[in-house]
Amino acid sequence: MAALRVWGPNLSRLRVRFDGSDTDLERGDDGFWTGPDLAAGTDYWLLLDDSDETLPDPGSRWQPDGVHGPSRVYDQDAFAWHDRDWKGRDLTAAVVYEMHIATFTEDATFDGAISRLDELVELGVTHLEVLPVNGVNGVWNWGYDGVDWYAVHEPIGGPDGFKRFVDAAHVRGLAVVLDVVYNHLGPSGNYLPKFGPIFKAGRNTWGDLIDVENPGVRRFVLDNALMWLRDYHVDALRLDAVHALQDDSPQHILAQLADEVAALQKSVGRPLTLIAESDLNDPMMITPESDGGRGMDAQWDDDVHHALHALLTGERQGYYVDFGSLEVLAKTLTRAFLHDGTYSTFRERVHGAPIDPKKQHGWQFVVCLQDHDQVGNRAVGDRLPEITSPDRLRIGAVLLLTAPFTPMLWMGEEWAASTRWPFFTSHPEPDLAKATAEGRVQEFASHGWDVSQMIDPQDPEAYRTAILNWSERTEGDHARVLRLYTQLIALRAAEPDLHGTDLTKTSVDYDEDAQWIVVHRGGFRIAANLSDEQVRLPVHGPELVLATGAARFDNGALLLGPQSAAIVRLTTR
Image 1 (cartoon, one colour):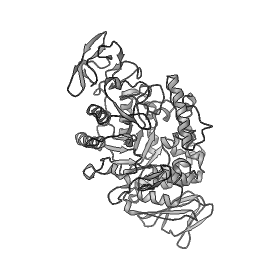
Image 2 (cartoon, helix red, strand yellow):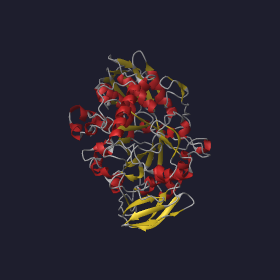
Image 3 (cartoon, helix red, strand yellow):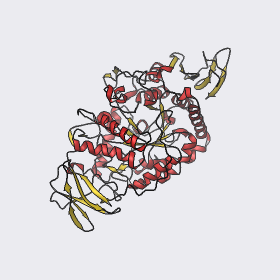
Image 4 (tube, helix red, strand yellow):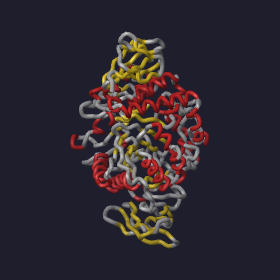
């Protein structure tokens, strides 16, 4: 049995309808209403004020019939966990694997994803970052149109399915990071405005601003974050686009979240991590609140991605305009951001703030070669193997997985997956579907992409073509790329100099004209030659640990073949 608790500060009356009868709920001083104890599995509707219109509970834990259907009581304590011995994992020495459940396997469910976890263990990753799983209208979606923040999308397995996934990951030694979205709500099935002042004046890129300054709204957000960490045993939250959370409260909502998660961490006895996706390029995000920061543990760092991508592909459109040189790559590999108080041509203004490498640790910056945004926000969703050469792809893998940051892979990257991952939706409403498709074309065109080949996101093929083809991972060059990623991850895990993230101990040499770069990581040198000629580098050691092309020592120097990378150990173990 569970007592209903419903947020509804705008309401003068609130009733629950179940088993053919209506019962009034009692209003509390905090804007939440409490009602009768309902048995697990009971379907119910809510009736607002004196209306006879039935609505689902916006804080429902279970929406088996979708966002417009009745809510169902869910017993959080009924699931039989097997992760009793799980001690958790923080981000130090981590390798993150980002995944979208509905396109990770043909099965398109949590159970389907569980069937592939052993391959990820063999790969050597430590954390699984799952794109949003909360309730969204339609069958397939990226997850960022969620409206039922507390419910797990039923088509991919519902609440028990997600718990099975987390449980299975933990049994295999894998931590789970959940992507959560508090900066906007999706366009279909959002009943929250009927219950209370969820929005405030103004809009961000994705929709109306969430009023996190309102105490009730703030509590609704904070309780949701704590629920995933506590009730679903999730190890970390990736907070979507936190720069879109406008909060002038005495304590910013992120800082309050950090405080409450720290308290929960003590209670559950395992590490709980908060990772902010922020466009601000500001170490304030990972600075403790006591020093004027937001208190996040880590943040995404797009500048490292942009530096690698532009260098490997030659693309300079849109936000890549300031990237693409070895000088830029050298800066991002040692100082995390290119724009750290410098002029951003794409933004047409000075942007960012510098980090202090003596205070900020490399593991606090999550970096990638590919992710759902950087692939899916291309006009046709083409992955890196389509837009650069196999040799340069290997160079990128070496540079990413030996960098002093927390590397993140995008599902399928480890075998150079050929499947595209375009933007896709399944909005049932024709007008919304049309508006989504038109808006996407305008957005892509403004970023300089060629939209002539873009697939309609509502076309079912946009979704179907995004599903990974697992059979290709054992074939030809796909298998060779998989071996490289596995070797690199194992090497990173085994060598403290390579998984160490003290930014003061990383330095870079490069030659812009000759197109080579050498990264100094303790007793290792990571060399990359992006030219079409062999280069002679001032690197010599007792061991050539790994090379993606021709490489050998010659009279105190490393001869490195064209379009290749090598890892050299300078000292013995």
